[in-house]
Length: 234
Image (tube, rainbow, N blue to C red; front, side, top):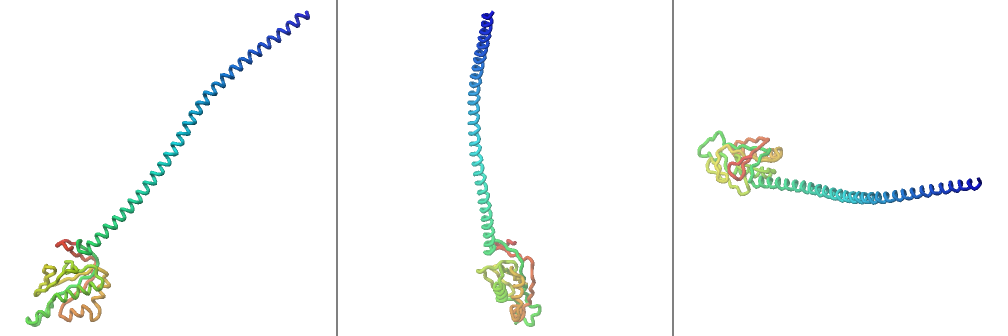
């Protein structure tokens, strides 16, 4: 009986040992499989991580390139704006010079001085003493230019530094164009200054009236003057 008892105990021990060995083998095999799967997953994770890193680097490069392009566009906009402003200044300057030289008609505020022959001429022999002559017109033109007139005209025709005025009886010729009285000498500029200049005591108006010339002076909001090309007006 004692022997059988030992056999039973031994058998049980062997059974348990076999079970433990089998269980350990299964666990070892399973752990090996887990490790193998983890390696594959790690490789995949590494691959995806590298892809992500490359995409992030590419994104940074694109963002930097985009910022550079935006800066280039801003610089171009500033340059274009500057060029447009410069071009506009050139155009305005060109127009000013063209108006100054008479290539373009001009319009502006100023004064008109009207010169008329005397209504009453007491003697035909002394008729020339009662009509407007070129010297009277030249006197008015010079006075207005001295007072700062920007442009001067006779009956709307612009006067230039090389213009010539001649008198043939009651007719005044301005650069070959003839006009009859009344003669309107227009001046564009500061109205108050021009008006005061010709109205000074013992000044222009007194001289003209002393020569039997009828004179009227008016301030005008807009005086039109032709260009050097015949017939063009502002």
